[in-house]
Amino acid sequence: MIYPTTLERSAAKNGVPNVLASHWTGDCQQAYECLRSELVSSKVLRIPTIGTPFVLHTDASGKAVGATLGELDEQGVERPLAFASQKLTETQMGWLQ
Image 1 (cartoon, helix red, strand yellow):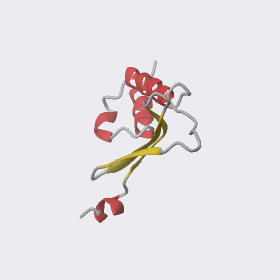
Image 2 (image 1 turned 120 degrees about the vertical axis):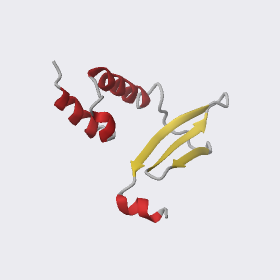
Image 3 (image 1 turned 90 degrees about the horizontal axis):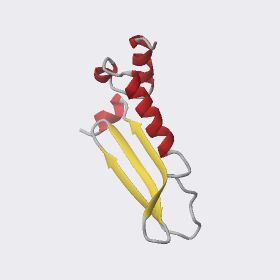
Image 4 (image 1 turned 90 degrees about the vertical axis):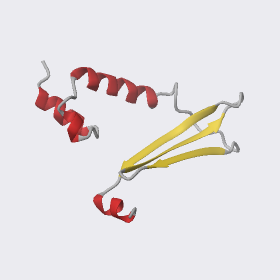
């Protein structure tokens, strides 16, 4: 059996906001781990093709920034090369004002 304190620690370690940590169940953890492993699998992420233009998407909120780097495959479908995200520190959040 997984106890709530273990789940809460796991949730906090995985970046789940404290307000959600008390609702983080074993099913949530299992879904998170499945999604994380699929996103970084070779089925999803590709190795870049030298000479192919990159496609960069960025996004930001008052609390975090994120980006994806991709390229178009032979059929013109955008395929991801990398994902990045970062929660902003209190100091960085202050820069937004």
